[in-house]
Length: 311
Image (cartoon, rainbow, N blue to C red; front, top):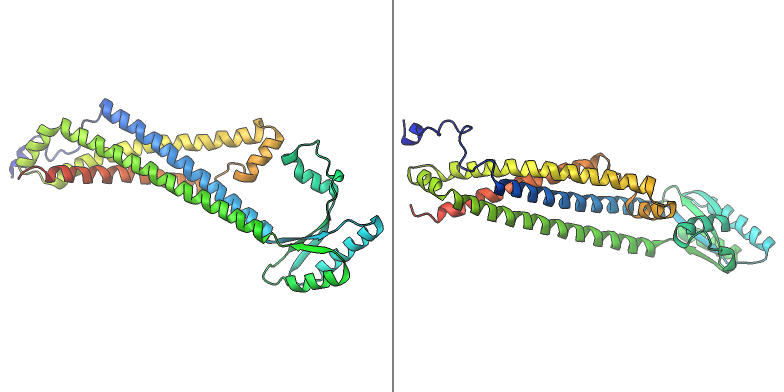
């Protein structure tokens, strides 16, 4: 039996801990981890919602094109609209085509411009919406040629430029969110380094004794790692639960408390703050990442500290 085995606390690892379990520093660190986890989860959730909304917008817009007819006399205008709809429906890859009336346009613009906005006061082109069943089979050049051969002063908007700008905006939001996550996790790692250093300094005598009587660096590091992993899980679960509560409250406020126009604008950007199963899985993954980061950072810090102790 080795000297280590004769010590009362070896062989009973669960009954002894190098790192005190209930201290002000430990509770403060758990609170810090909870806050960092909450910020990480909220950042991840916001990026996830914006990305999903952008993909939905881009997919929807990619399946529609707009035919613009310049205003004319009523009878001629109605005739041009019917011809445009007919030619569009005959084009391969087109599922449906219909007129976007002035009333429809006002309804779409009301959330942004208010109910007092009168679109009839503006000299705007008449719109025909063409919905595509399969964008890969759609022949834009054939439709454009047939329309221009039949109707004067006509334009076709594929929304390509708008989609590029939308995707660029979404990409900027995603990159910004990733950078924010990196900064939050980096700040968490720095906090763990200082907390581990403080714990090592506080228990320096115990660590020195264990180190010099033959306790391996792995054993000492594992004790710190296990303790900080528990702190990371505790704080992470609290922060993750707070983030889930945040999104639930935000969804409730959006759907029930905000005015209809404001709620519509928020939903256009974030949807209904509904993360879905994949979103909740992502939040749980963030909790696990923070907990693992806490454990690994503490272990590396302990090994670095022990390497400075003369053998």
